[in-house]
Amino acid sequence: MKLALVAVLGVAKAGWYAILKGRLYAALRDRRGTARAIGDTGAVAGSLLPLGVGLIARAVGRLLDAAPGAAGAAGAGARGSRRTHARELTGVWR
Image 1 (tube, rainbow, N blue to C red):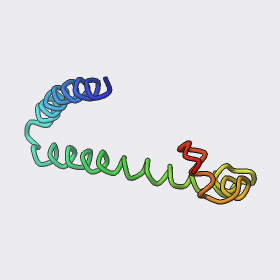
Image 2: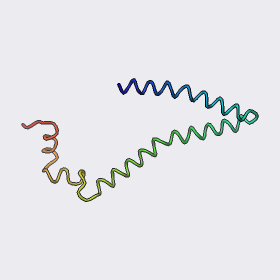
Image 3: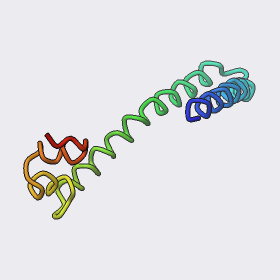
Image 4: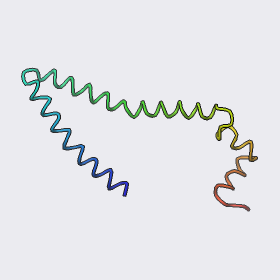
């Protein structure tokens, strides 16, 4: 289901990219170099977006781990060893 949704979004996005790029070149008919520079700047900004999301996620994760009473800080110590915790998660009790 998720794969089909990603495929549909990819096809929908691919068509809009060509249309918008054509409109940019039409608007800047005599300045094609400027149009290309604008397009390249947008591409660089778009490629940095996943990096920004990852950095924000890492910062939030560190804040949550450092907070008093956080699940990450109290998880293994409150229940015992990590091995015991892994057994609880997997249901293996040998």
